[in-house]
Amino acid sequence: MAEVKARSGRGGGRAARVKARTNPPPVYLSTLNRKVGPIDLLGPEGVEKIHNAAMTILEATGIEFRDPVALADWKKYGADVQGERVRIGREMLMDLISAVPPEWGYAARNPERSLRVGNQHSVFANAYGAPFVYGLDGVRRPSMLEDAHNFFKLSQMSQSMMVPGILPVEPQDVPVPQRHLELVHAALTLTDKPIKGSVLSEQAALDSVEMTRIVFGEEFVDNNVVMAALLNCNTPLVWDETMLQSLRVYAAANQPCLLSPFVLAGASTPASPQGGVALLIAESLAGMAYSQIIRRGAPMVLGVAIMGVSMKTGAPMMGSPEPGLMNLLVGQMARFYGVPWRTCTMWTGSKSPDMQAAFDTANTMWPVLLGGANYIVHSAGFLEGALGVSYSKWVQDALQLENFHRFFSGLQEENLDALLGDIENIGPGGHFLGTDHTRENPMHMNHLQNNDSFEQWEAEGSKTAEVVGTEEAQRMLNTYVRPPMPDDQRGALDEFVAKKRLEYSA
Image (cartoon, rainbow, N blue to C red; front, side, top):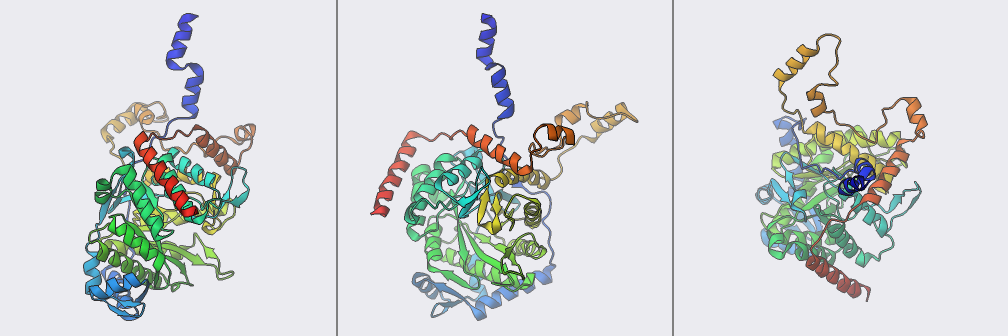
């Protein structure tokens, strides 16, 4: 009996083995190195046509920079500035854009989680900014700080969610001036993956950069990307003061911004794919060009967030063909300019993780990856036209990301001679289930998808996908382990947040 106990103590016994099978540690996916695509819809003449249209918009119509510092910077640099309207010559713009790196490393607190962005590399990033959640009970309610913490934890536990982000949901229970402190602190301590920074205000951007300097060191941050910031242009043709203030902070700190027009095709842009893309390209390039006036060579990302508009209600509409075509065009134009590009995906107008949500989610991801997107935001969980995040859908989407990662990684090396030997040995009427090759190369399997018989599914509770997703989210949260952080870093970070929290509540 003593021998049995000793063996049980060493290995943990049956309970430990069951736990290891049911709660396996994540096997994190690396940066997606795309081997399928991209698709180019346009020939050289079509690319030149959209390029000339974008340049004409910037030269003739111009774009408003509603910020006195930016206007002064543009005027000093030689652009045509009339009031808040800035007109940028194509030679000037192309010279500035040429300084944007085509690819950059994305450092994580844990170097094993670091990524690459640009060229053939793609990364999946978390949902961003939803004011509502569909909770573990399925009920829609305002999002709270605990929900933000939970989605950071799910991101850490996920094999495929590469960038936990900064704002998976808007915590309604935290005062606005303090939100960025709580969120950046949580992203840095609850995960050890690459994060995003806040653009709530100039001060929020400064605090975000300072918090990464505490964790990574000032010199490291100055020479490496440790966070990215999402900046939205007010389409059509307006960059506002808050966004430009944050852009200056991040560009000066050598941290990339995802400079993203928010496109409602048919409302804020022309309904036609080529006309809409010409406008959004002009807007994003103008922001990228300005960043190079602040710090030439700072990494930046050409960003877009493309939705259609329902002609019945005027509401945003996901999963329709036209935004997919526009994403393909944006990808081709980004390659023409030699810059990384960002877009959105995996979102839906549905109010539950139902068939519409599944269709919309798949229909938005395929053109994004076939278009060669480098930084893919909102990769899991969105419902309700990006106003809500569902725990259940988040988990289901994250597992679908593993499928997309496998598909776009392309064909693997195969030893055809060995396979011919298997075929010869098995012969007519046999099967390959017992071959070494089958055991060593199983097909990718999503463990939440049910492929059992109806009777087996019924015997196990007739669980819908929404129920299965919710149960998996709860399991992941229950088994979450906080990644370690050195005591001196954690202490300095806590002290900084506590000091700022008092300052902003005064």
